[in-house]
Image 1: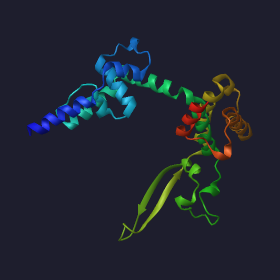
Image 2: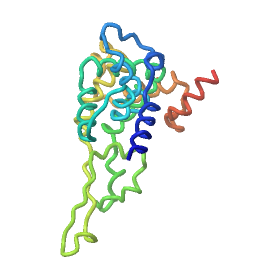
Image 3: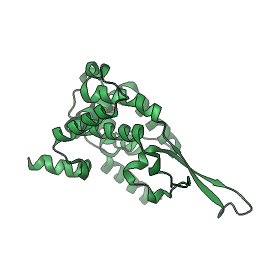
Image 4: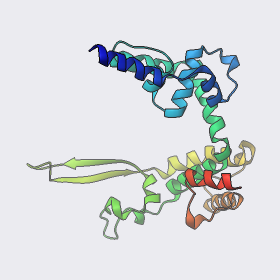
Length: 229
């Protein structure tokens, strides 16, 4: 038992991050938030791992049980000053990809607003299997549910899904347009005009130098491209 306790303490020490390393990792001005050293370490490790329990331990906090650890680390995430620090880090981290994220949002809501029902159903009205639906159009499916019936529900069931609402998607396009082209420009932009929305989408692809047929380059490839520039 004593040996295992010593090992646990050693592993905890390995997990802990120095305040200097934490500040270098975040690299965002947080002075106005007046975070304590352990809070800064918590933010840094959380932004590095997205694991609140690891961040809690690495920051130097302790908890007597797993439940207490989870509860206390959740409380840390909910703290206004800490959540603001995390948001600032995320905002800075995604800045190089902001235009690409705008395009991805535009693509998502464009598909959800203007999908063709034939993508999801056969000509006789029956639903297609999920693997028959192109992956890029699956973002139009809001939920999938197994409906079981009969004496053997484990083998007797139908797969049901809910397709998104075009009306709701059109509403969302307004906010996406505000991000993509600015609030003032979006105010005069008719959200029900598919042709103009398509033109905006094409313009974004052109600005980023991406071919639409190749799709949006995944972030890992995009990072390599940025390093090569």
